Length: 459
Ligand code: HEM
Image 1 (cartoon, protein in one colour):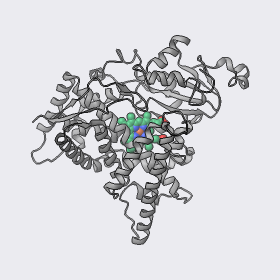
Image 2 (spheres, rainbow, N blue to C red):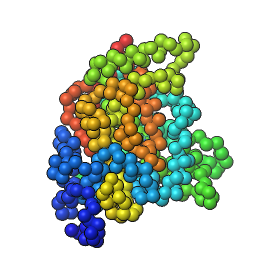
Image 3 (cartoon, rainbow, N blue to C red):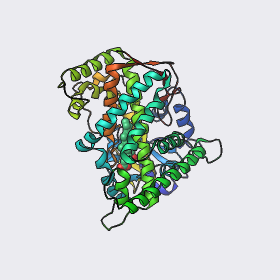
Image 4 (spheres, rainbow, N blue to C red):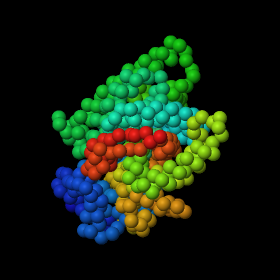
């Protein structure tokens, strides 16, 4: 009643659903499902109570919301910037930064996105990073094989963090990198947690981690500005140089707060996701022998066809990894790293026959789209061969989102995972300490033990 009273007769056009408990809304059922062994039960309970629909009303993260569960409704919202803007919960905006892409206006987003996306995407950019990524992958695998037991996920996150640091802050040393990497682990626990700023709660710890991250990055930005002034340096070595030089069409430049928030966001988005997806792809390959065999054969063929004087991978070879690309796509679907993204209705909008009122939050629930039985028969089965001759229709495969906010790091992420799997498949295997380790689904799907195990050389 509280949320619907101002809608008048329009309330009859709202999608089915309910608002859960007073104050906490549907968060209790959401957290209960995602802390159980069956995260799908959150949506399947809604479907069994209210019937199958494209969207459902709910009360999530402190706001009246609509949850979108089908390809068509998700696609509609992601591609309609006239009617929707980012609508992330305040907890996410406070942690990632009000001046990052989750908090700025459409115009600023367009400018900063153009500036930052080109250097991490496209053929030229990727060929610049390929060698750096490959050298670090080879070194990391050799080290891990010597180390004995490792937390595989933790090590992979370190590796992907090193790569994104190279792109954004190439001249910073190991110390800055380690300090930042540690804080990100804490920061991420609060991103999907309840916004309770009391000692002991995840959100409280994450805010503290953000403060330390900002302090470290502030020192980096101040030092870089001074160095560039004193040496009159004009060569852009990394993304920080590009951000410090950037001018919009009115000649406005970014202040420290804006530069730091863009860094906080990119450094986070650029390592957490690729680290998790690379771990899952490796685990899933290792636990599906027929997939392992086919993927390994493809990599052996690539090496066999290589000219004898060629050292290391080329982008052309990465593009020949057709089967591996299917394995990665299936991992992206099966794991769905970004469970949902958030938008807010700028005006009353009709989506698939239902009203989304102005100001309501919209949760684009990728997980339901990727587990749809009609598009993906037996969706709970990891089956890369489902991609043989199959191109999903628009909106049916959204691991990187869509529309103007499509992930700018999608090509880089797939490249990192492909290079890692190439070397892993040729020379190593993974032996998990607890293959049946329970999973955690928040903030992202991972084994509780961070994939404790050994990387073994096989040759
Ligand atoms: C497997 C790895 C990755 C996955 C699954 C992933 C997923 C996503 C998704 C779903 C979005 C859309 C958010 C929205 O619609 O609001 C997104 C946005 C974003 N991603 Fe990624 N991402 C990955 C890797 C990366 C990498 C490597 C980078 C860094 C280069 C990156 C940087 C970003 C940024 C900056 C945005 C915000 C884009 C915007 O608002 O315009 N991501 N990512």
